[in-house]
Amino acid sequence: MTTPDSTTIPLWSHEAEASLISTILHGGQPTLDAALELVADDWFYAPVNRTAWLLLKDLAHKRQPVDLLTFTEAFRQSGELAKIEGGPGYITAEYTRIAGNLTHWADQLRDYWRRREIHRIGLELILESRNFQKPTDDILDASEKLLLDLRLETRQTGLIHCADAVDAAAQRIELAHKKRGKPIGIATGFTDLDRMTGGLKPGQLIIIAARPSMGKSAFATNIAEHACLHDQVPTALFSLEMTGEELMERVLCTQARVKLQRVRDGFMSKDEMSKLGRIVGEIQSAPLYLDETPALTIAAFRARARRAVAKHGVKLLIVDYLQLMKGATKRAAQDRRLEIDEISSGLKATAKELSVPVIALSQLNRDAEERAEPKLSHLRESGSIEQDADVVALLHRPERVSHKEEDKGKAVLILAKQRNGPVGRIEMHFDAEITQFRSSTEKLYSNNKAERQTYKPNNFNDPNGDD
Image (spheres, rainbow, N blue to C red):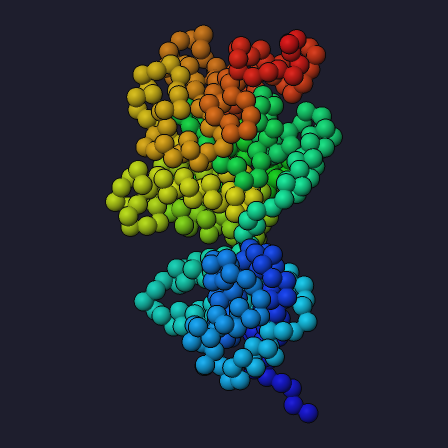
């Protein structure tokens, strides 16, 4: 008895393709409308079935009746009917099957299409492996992107009934009620920021902007530390400016509360060395992943982000910083403003596609240096950053401008934009010696005014206030 050769198993099903067409013809216009939201042209393998599908799409476009008679006549007028053995008899035999479940047949077609794509990618890789003009790393990067794109391929949902959205909103309200003031999304570790935003939510692009040397890298690193060390949230930090070693040196000092300069000089006490030693083990076991590639393109970032989510379950992406990234198209490379537009929209698309929050640091225009506090209009090189962002926070340290002793250690985070929430100023503290920002308040909600920040009027309503 011989075992069938697996390479001879067809990667398509005429039954599934013809049954889907038959289901549409039985269901008429409503079923066709539903199919247009579920099915892609490439999912059909047999030319005759793809022709049938395209003719149905044409009927929908022309708003003609969706029935066997109209369909057969459209086949005839297209000239394709004469090419089919059996003519109208073929249509009657193959496309008048018992109506089935549209979603079932659509899932069948999609699965066969994915298998064909895997087969195609495999053949391409065989050819690429013999192309010694191309670096091996480039071949690996391209293959990873192709496979991850296929893994993360999702359908367009199109219009949905409001009941679905209401149900999702109700679940979110119930979650907020259960948490009683704690952030719904990923906590940043900064009490007042979490209070105003509700945490970092899936699909959000959060921009943290500042002038040079204001501490935006330290601020983002502090968020990453809280996420992965305190809450065990898998986090990926893309550092285009600092090396992984430099980042981890900062994290060690912050967590051990040891002065960074003492570590760099080597003058640590035995107690400080002991603290650092204990922290090393904690950080090594944290779900924190680093990418220190300089001049990372937005296309490469998106591919690596997909891999991080698929392989490591990453739920938070941080980019330090936006202006050091490169565009992927030649047109963008010739115009810096277009390039920033491409990068910004790419970051937002990544957040939505992977359903994770993306924090991107950004520089401010030089004209902001002459002002006491930055504004949204100071975002560097492109208005699209503000447009794409769900949240824009401007980081400012008064001492960097005034050089006054009374301003030492003071910091302010100006929540200048929030697509679905309040805006306002958040007073903070910055310990430059251990590169750590801290909240001015320790509690999200409290009846004791000394335990919560006093906000300026018109910033946002204080749930614990007297109004």
